[in-house]
Length: 165
Image (cartoon, rainbow, N blue to C red; front, side, top):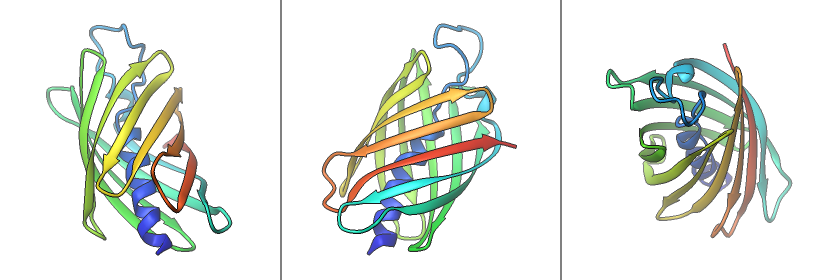
């Protein structure tokens, strides 16, 4: 059961992390996805309502589309309770984010919407099973992700720090 919830949590986190703008929101010529291209790895914690939190480790790969307004992300995460793999596509237009994600092991998916902020962005991730609010902050080659689950009966939240390289 925890592995299913891990999948929802990681799906929420990493679809959104794929959209993190790494340049100022008012920069007109650069894609907000340019600095994401490449491989990232990191660790954090996921919190449950009825059991102790677990450590989580993740690896992510980001590829930018030719038009530079879209990024494709693949992420793999693991805890003691199980594994998850997510593929997502995120588009940016005038500081607004839209996208879709799919967890490929358990075959569930959802959509995301969000806004570019001065330090990263704020997003809402929704699927049939979970809604989550997320804040993502970027500083150089570091990403910090914080998730608060809104309607989950089992999940509290998740924090993750990822480094490029």
